[in-house]
Image 1: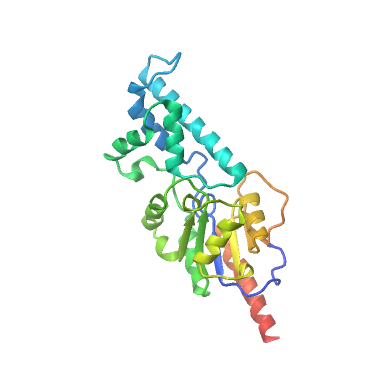
Image 2: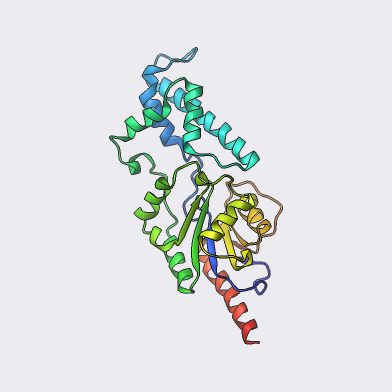
Length: 264
């Protein structure tokens, strides 16, 4: 764990977290299960030029086509920082495939529990303990996630793992006009946790550009959680952590430094 200027800055009122790669384990193929479900339902009804005769192989090809639509959609939203919704993504997938992908998903998931087709979504084992410790200092806890998924998707997993009650406010880009690193996304998160001065909040994330650069440009302090799967960016975070639990002593140091200045 390293910190830049642990004694700098004013009082701290809130800690706001990224979700995937920070509070939750990083999932490189977040929508893969969804595309596989849709492909299973649609494969018998759609045809591609040169499509293989084997149904399993055809399902895989349909799923790959849908995943390619997602990749292009995500790349475009990242480029202009405009938030995208799952509904928009499914509409593009339907247009590309020539079939109603959303309806196929509804029919497939009607007979399955969400947990059964998203087994890769797991929260960090240290998350609950870290959130409790930070709340013990009187800090408000927030979450700001770049996501196509609607709120209900994330809330289900947060509630399943006992984290929802530990996070005072959750903000998802699927409900915003722009996503991180756009300043308005961080402004929405600050408003949600009731912090008017950005410098009185710290953002914790695993992406140097979206999370650290974006937060600092918006006036927040920023802590980078190392994630080797994420591209780097030339930015100096206010703190660096490898494990989530390392955040607690880092924040404690900032709080102690502020208290000492107050007594001085």
